[in-house]
Length: 246
Length: 119
Ligand code: SF4
Ligand code: SF4
Ligand code: FES
Image (cartoon, rainbow over all chains, first blue to last red; front, side, top):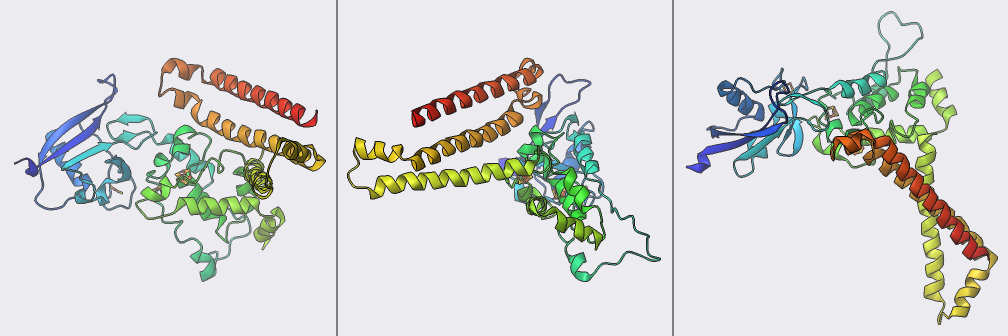
């Protein structure tokens, strides 16, 4: 009989009522087919309307339902229950390290502040051509594995360096985007961008723990991008400035 | 301070320490019959003294960077807050005491070593 039940342990916290967060246990009939973790949350919410979490696209595109599923960060909507269930048990917690607003909803301000810091837009002050700024196919290829990030924060919130210094360490997500613009042949602020990252914290707090690579639901590799940024920082400044002028 | 300077210092100092380990092991393993005399003679040469002094300076520098990193990761209001609010409120003070202690320890340690080597 027990095999047909799922035991869900859910992080609950409503600052207006609870003094401390707590784990609440739910028992639910095991669905007949494999569903996603987000579907499971929806089922729970049918019975308990007070459960709060973010979601929108339900297909791994918007990045809003990042959460900690049985100890590993991921997107609930594209994580099949079968892939995470352990002895019919599942534990759901908010993304670690960020302040909790309520239940699985976290305050992402610090995460976005870092994203803002890296100036996530193309900087090119030369006169714009009539149609568009062109790029060779080879230069365009350099952006693969970088532009696909959906800013779900699964990586940054699994990174110990980001847990301890979210105000100073840019974190894997924003660093991946920093490199996305450093690697873009159309962007002409490469040396300024590097200068902004040259302090002991912004990039250098990455100790290559690789948690970020381990969790990214889009299969991206922030650690590799961070390595590229470091080698750019160690390059001769003149070469970088020359690449901006060309 | 540039992050790259710290980054390079940590890596090159580690390499230098490795060289020293090889240098000393080379003496220990390839010199048969080490006695007090051969050992102290080895350390009396100007070359060994200079290298040893340099190495201990490097060692202290290397340790300093490591401990500074640990301090700025784990002795901050956020991290100490996991233990208690009171500690978290005094994070800056705690961290500065910690920095002071290991800096002092490093200086005393280095002074002793240099004194032993050169006198
Ligand atoms: S590799 Fe760097 S950015 Fe990624 S989790 Fe580790 S410390 Fe964080
Ligand atoms: S790199 Fe991956 S895990 Fe990190 S924010 Fe982007 S999509 Fe999410
Ligand atoms: S709901 Fe959009 S990524 Fe999961």
